[in-house]
Amino acid sequence: MAECPPLGRRLVSEGVGSFFLFACVIGSGVMAANLSAGNDAIALLGNTAATGAILFVLITMLGPISGAHMNPAVTLVMAYRRELPWPQAAAYILVQLACGILGAWAAHVMFGLPTLELSVKARHGLGQWTGEAIATFGLILTILGTLRHRPQWVAATVAMFIIAAYWFTSSTSFANPAITVARSLSDTFAGIAPADVPPFIAAQLLGAAAGALVGGWLFSDD
Image (cartoon, rainbow, N blue to C red):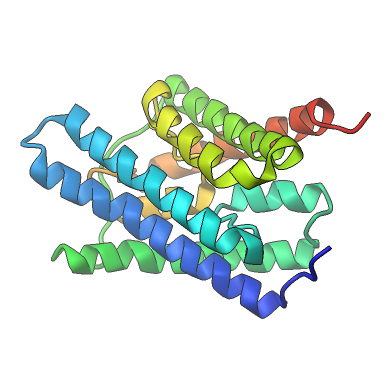
């Protein structure tokens, strides 16, 4: 079994991954909105394609170093499964959030937007919260199941699940507490009003917990 890379290298991996993932989600949303002439379906398609592509690249590139979580929900599940010590999980989450926000700000700078702003895009209601719970549940199942049966396919299956979930969930599948916070700091196509962040994160954590429990049983060796 390969030796686990030093914590510092893994944290840099999580930081780099979160930076590019969050910059891509927000930046591609801005670009898509600018080019779609008001057609939200076309804008979402562009946002979806870019997000799926960057996920595939980042997980392929950084997965062997840190696991390429880039998502506190994934990190918490791995800590629950004792695949990552809790103190290290806390460090992962802090880096994901900090570097992800830097990625959001970098997208603003690239597109000439104010660096510091708050979203006014409302995303609330039972339907959206259910969408987030289902999206995160499905993401965790995808990760655990693929790691169990086809570990070399994790990058592809995660990317494809998120592409699909952008379209079949009412919330367009944030499925990531850190990116939810970062998107509240961006008044763009991908944004979410700060007041709507707490219930989104609660739904994501509920979905992640359900995914960990179901996945732990479904993909067990017994």
